[in-house]
Each structure stands twice: as structure tokens, then as C-alpha cells.
Length: 518
Image (cartoon, rainbow, N blue to C red):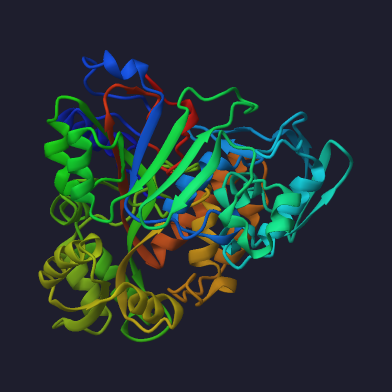
């Protein structure tokens, strides 16, 4: 690996951003005003604004982050991701791997009750897991799961398709919340109409398109929540939601618009937090078909780009420039020296690739400003070395179908969210040849040795050895310019400053049962 930039580069950028706006880093506590604790101390309810309705209240029947946010309040998982990113016991008190990392035996917590009063058993746990594995919605986290078996009254065994140490991270996902077997079987296909879990909150009412109401589970195994009534209020217009937060009509605004950022930060009674998310924004190439099958051309494009300017101009500075294919705020992230802007080298590589006078390319882009604005900056930077970029703005569904499913594109700017906070989620889905097409590995690159390194990393328990493997994977991705990592995204949350316990979560894990009024 090249020598040069150190880890301080990334974190100094984050520090500058933090000092500039008075924020806190991801999961590191809160900042804001403490003056208005008086009358709010007597409250025991919270109104949480979300930007869209949930697609389902059944853990196994959804795959969007807003639904996950709601489901986490009603359903517990076997293990839990803590605010600092560590994995901690939840409904499973402990676990043990077999020798080849293909089986994970978990000891199940005893005395836990479902919302209907039934005691949770290992039968419920195995049923929940196998139900999720069978669902078409959960493949992102269950593709390596074969089945779960009951061992005895206190243990279950998760059997994997192949060695896969990221299985623990997968078990943190809301899709794998434990449901009451009897309630789910009785409900049939209508379980979302009366969801029954072991979580801190019980389902009360779902007025579709308007609100979702819950009440505290007083028998919760972690202890009865301080917040007794929880309402998720749906505001499809985030600016309307921001006004509602200002007026005190809602208490928490999930992932607010950055356009409302300055105004909300200046409000006396509102705290705004932001920090790195487990998202990677990157330039992807079709490495098999078309002009970018030429590796030197891909490298030329990478040398032409300035990621700091892309962040500054494309996302108003709300990103952390990175050259690693693993996003910051993810396990095994490490500083990596990739492509620094070098226009002369870019021009030389263009000539070597057979384009001494430059060329024209088409970049298909999601029409959302989250993608279109950075793409315009990329367009401007590539023009400096003689590459003309024709931007084709597309509606989201059509964009995903053409670029990621059909792989009909030349290059594109995109983002991946690392849903399980383990690098394998990105490495296997985006770079392994077995995942070509179908919305996963749409670069279609075939790099000698890359599959083998990815397979070795996903089955390696030793942390130091696993880090070495991911370093080698990053090096191959860089050498062959499969993608050009540009920046890690930011996440944010705004809330009533009299609330305690709210924090910014890079992986969007929020537990209202741990909130309280000052």
C-alpha cells in the first residue's frame, strides 16, 4: 500500500465540521440547550416524526429503514448493536461458534414475555428466524442462513450455508426481530395488523398515512420504559415536520432536510446532531462492457477527481472524504491511500487508454439531488481533462433497473448503505463475482484473487487476520479502479432539547425506551 496520508486526515476533517457547527460525532452524546427542562419533566409521551409510512409492521415483511425504526420499538433481536457500534447480548445471553464457523449456538434469555403475556421459548425463536429466512424481503441479511434449529429449552442453533462470521451483525437487523409463534400463526398473512413481540412498546393503532401509536410494555425484560406513550407521526414533507418541531408539535425529527439544518440549529429549544453514517458514496464503472472495460480509462477518471471538492460543492460539506471501499463508522475501516487528484497523470492515462483528445461518456444518475448535485461536480472535474459527461437524470426505479439490475450503463455515482455494519455486506454484494447483476455486483469486474480474499475474510474469526484481508481487498479494488470511493455520508437527527438519551446513529438504530424527559 502506498505511504502518505494518515488516519488524522479523515478525523481532522470531521473535527473541523464538528467545531464549525457545534455538533457531536456519531453516537458520542448530545449537544444543545438544557434550559427548558421544567414542564417537560412531567411528560411521559414522545411524538417521533418520520418522513413516510412504514411498509409493514411485520419484521420479516419489510426492508426500508423507516419501517426498521418503528419495528425496533416493538421487537427485540437476539443480539443488539449498541450506540458505540459494539454487539451486545439481547434475547440471546451468549453464543458460541463451532470450529469452522458454520454453526452458531445461542443461549436464549429465560423469563421474557411477549406482549400477549406468553413466555418466549426457543420454539418462538427458531420459528421467527426460519420465517424470516423464507421471506423475500430479508435476503440482504439472511442469504447465508440455512436454518435455525431448537437444541433444547434454552439453546438454538443457527446453521449457515458457509463460514460467515458477520452472522452476528446480521442478527442485529430489525428483519430478525423475534415474534410470537402462536400470534403469527393465528394471524396468518395479517400479522402486521396486530404485531406481537417482546419489545419495549406494544402496538396500539396504525392509522395508515397518518400515525402509528404504541404504549409502554410494563413487563419489558430490560425494565419498564420511562416514555409511556410513543407516537410516530408521518410528515411526507420534511420542512413541514421541521416547523412542527419548532412549534413543539413533535419531539423528534428523524433524518431532517439539510436545508433546514441552519434554522433548526439556531432554535433555542432544539438540538441538532449529526455524524458519519455507514454509507459509502462512490463512482462505479461497468468494468466488463463498453468503454470502461479499459482499466487505464477507469484510472484516468479516478485521478481526475477531487473528493474534497465533491463533498464541499455536491453535499454542502456534509460528508467525510474517503479512499477506502469500507465506509467510516464501520468495523475494519482503516485509512487507505487511493487516488489523489493528479490532472497530468489523468491526461497521460487517457492517452495510454487510446483517448489522447478525450472522449464523451454518459452518466446515468438518480434524479434526486442527493445524487444529481455531486454528479454535476464530477462532470465539471472530468471536463478539465477532456472527458465530456452527458448526465442522464432518471426516476429512481428506472435508474436502479437499468444500472444495477440490467447493468446497462457506462459509469454512475451511487451509494451503498452498510446495513449490518460489517464490511462483508459491501464486499460480497458489490465485488464478488457470484453476485453479478441482480442489483448487487453491477460493476461486473473480474479481478484475479478478489473472490478468494472476500471468501477468506467472511469466514475469519481472528480480528488481525481479517483486517489484513480487508486491506488486501481494498488494494485490489484500488489497483484495478473497480470503483472510486469518494466519501462517507452523514446522518442527522433533531429533537426537543429537554429529551435525554437521543443520539445520532450511523446505522440508524434508535431505542426510544432509553429516552426520558429532563
